[in-house]
Length: 226
Image (cartoon, rainbow, N blue to C red; front, side, top):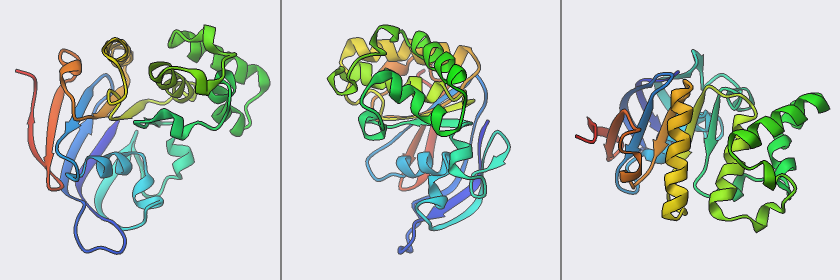
């Protein structure tokens, strides 16, 4: 579902490679977690997977990155977002609406879906995340865990086949972190390909299939929790 082949990427206006010689796959029903110190290339890896690099950030990419067989360099980011969704560390930064239902429905409406289809997908995604009771709420009055669920519901409403999570446990309390772990296990069981970028690993024990440790732009180690 997500595949990196001999990938090296350099941002515009610099000669230093952000990532080098990356080979990585995430199959349907598989969860892989990428970790490592700040500046090691984790964020760039995520941007390459969702097409932001090189389409938005420019720069030079050698090798290939594909999602569901589509080249991320040449497939419009808007089209890629229907195949691979990204939930950022602070979901509020990617919100466009003021109320929960409108936020989940935003991307659906922007794609010209009918009112009935938008309503059906919005309600289904909210039910899937257990936030149906929040649909009428002010989005800024929610807890961090609730905001994260809204962000994920908005992504799932589009029906992607793969997901990327950027430091998803960073702003969550232990209860919300455990709740997120259960949700990822459920999505994985349903065949979703999941790539998680995080400093903290404990909460993914028993869920992650592989852990990749990055150093200085390269995958330095691969292993599990054993």
